[in-house]
Image (cartoon, rainbow, N blue to C red; front, side, top):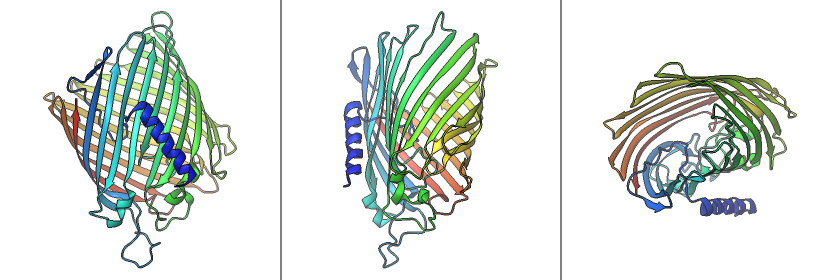
Length: 423
């Protein structure tokens, strides 16, 4: 193993040992509180275990056994039946002095080799951890210290193709300030993040013409990001507030001097609140500007509406425009339209559905690139017992890019069956 590989595994082991295995938010259902748990002070510690069988049509790139050349790979992402085993912990300790919220998981991802024989060597460990310490949560001045760790095949880098593992960690500190009766709240925040990448497969996909679609070279896009900012909220009506958000992100790439660093300033303001007893609206607009060498600026904003059809059924939809740093190109813009629905039936059956379309534009006049990403996620969860939850679901991801390469142009179907045991 290379020295950089040792560093990554050491970081992974250290964070998991300190924070415990955690629940990742990406494509994961919330762990129910079920059972009695283990009493910890005023709170409860809930051990849990997930078993998931997932049929995935696009897990990675692997050698093509139909040819005699070991360097030849399949022309597209390979399918596989994947087993995921997730032991974990969830802890909540409420307190007026220091509230603790933590959750975690350690995940073994096993490629069975039933559909793609040579995929078994791609089996790997994933995991996540979330820890939040909230000091003086009921006071006029508080302090929040938080850390989020995630090792997953769902990378945050929009420029990279499929078949990539990401190791991400972000530490944050914020100071909620609520003078008077709490109608005004100001929260300055400082965050530091790093992300490292490595391939799932060990071969270059067919048609790859740029480094961003080559999983072998993804470690060139490892980065460090520092973000400083503040948010404010003024509740000028009982259920309506004026909101302001601003932050400055400084992105530096650790290995690749070809990726332009970014100094991105973003600011938004608007309204958030109820317009009726059943309808909530968030409307914000602002601007993003890059002071880095690659330049780039655009308006950003969000318009979202939530309809509470009944106490157990909600619908949400909206449009979001963001501007973020990205490897190789400097910046990218994301225009997203999305809809979401959730319904609780009989107190035990939860139905969810989510659909989104993202139009991604990358800021590099010498290499113009535009991607379209379609996402669909749906399925039911059923609570058989307070300690047993079952779920089935289907996820669709379709990506098309103006850049050639099967890693950036693919359709991925995922069907899963999951059982969760909670104490």
